[in-house]
Image (cartoon, rainbow, N blue to C red):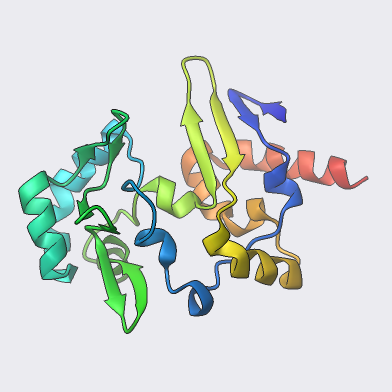
Length: 188
């Protein structure tokens, strides 16, 4: 672990390799697990605002879940997260054949909204836990991503480079530039 500004960062994000391999996993991270995607308070407001524009992209089951539970929920641990369909799929999940995709991101890709998706989804496999004085930035190893780890090794892409856009979105350009310096220093 090392400190970077007001973050404590796991060296795993510099040392481990990762490139999403949707053809192998079929977007399992959006349909597996026992909770929705983590959200910030600001993101809950964004979801409320964009829902009417995202709704046409969603499956009827997702719309039903959102209209019954809301555009976001408090999880069993009290954290804010996306609602689920029958405690499984994220309510915002759509499918292209058998591959899970994000309905929010599809609306973004088509220029309907200007918000890509929750930053926790954009950052994956990095998870950020906010504390009073700092944020912990960790690599989340999940067996459903084994193919992504293999592809990352094959292509020699470390986690932090794979999620560069999301890290800049979360922490800013200057923070990412400092992270790159740490990564270069570690290679020496």
